[in-house]
Length: 291
Image 1 (cartoon, rainbow, N blue to C red):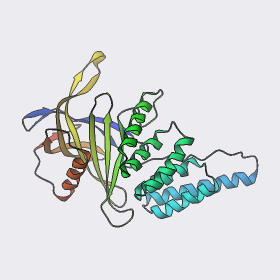
Image 2 (cartoon, rainbow, N blue to C red):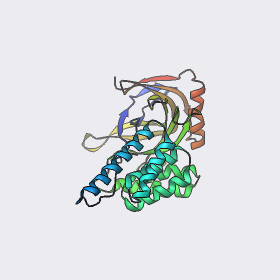
Image 3 (spheres, one colour):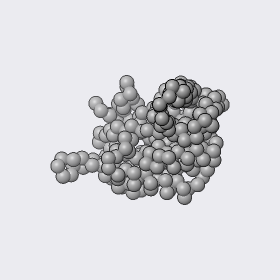
């Protein structure tokens, strides 16, 4: 899963008697996975035809996945892997689709195969985190997360890891229908400011369009350091629960619903996002973004 991060700053405002600003990574709605098929000699017409056939089937699998037809998409990718066991794109996509279907043990198997072939590709790590979290294997999650941090330090940085680190923590179905509405919870963490963790709760409809975006993030301030560079520092251990309102895909307002004195557990953060779906309370404050 390639994640494009655009940092924004919520300008300093007064809320609950405390000045705060929040910087957060706002992630594009769609997962993007480039196809990776094992290269083969193309000296004969028959082999070119086989590659073209695999490519067309792969593209169809991607289309089915985007339509939420995961069972059909999975069969396409598995069919490709029976013919080309090292088809990297299909290994990755099989793991992604199995995660969406909550078949985490099977997802791990395909994602581990992908990692053996592409050990430097961070997408294998992020989707493995999701699968291991589904299996409640916290030790494996911690090790994979540390690996993401190390990947960030390497130069040149991979696209998607150049800024903040984030990954999908969970996909919560909001419909009984496969491919229906869902909430994606994304975890963002900054290894230079431990234990800096924030969560996004993104709500999508059945067409994959982003409907609402919740955020649980730290109160923080912006300071100017050497060479005029601005950095964010945590101003307290308090966290702000709210919703981001956008216009034409640009954040315009942050609505504050609750101020928490200490960082909640993931389970508590998850519950608060789901509660906001059920009932939206009266705002404590509104913060203008990018005026």
